[in-house]
Image 1: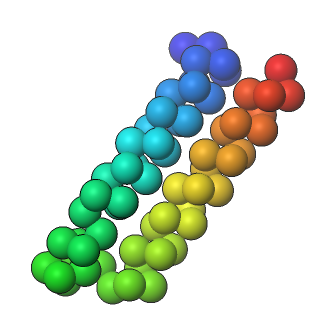
Image 2: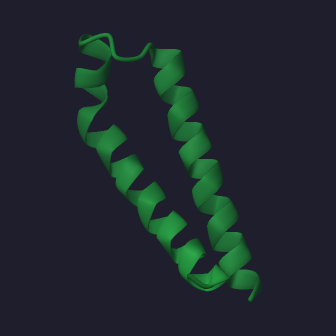
Length: 60
C-alpha cells in the first residue's frame, strides 16, 4: 500500500467512525459503553486523525 492509499484509507475509516458515533451516541451512552467524556475524547481523536490524514494528503 502506498502512502497515498494509506492516507485515503485513514480518511475513510475516520469518516465511518464519525458516522458511527453520530448515529449511535445515545445508545453508547445509555448502555454504558462509554461515558460522555470518553465518547467526546474518541470523537476528538477521530477528528484529529481525519484532519492529520487530509493535511498530509493535501501536501502531496
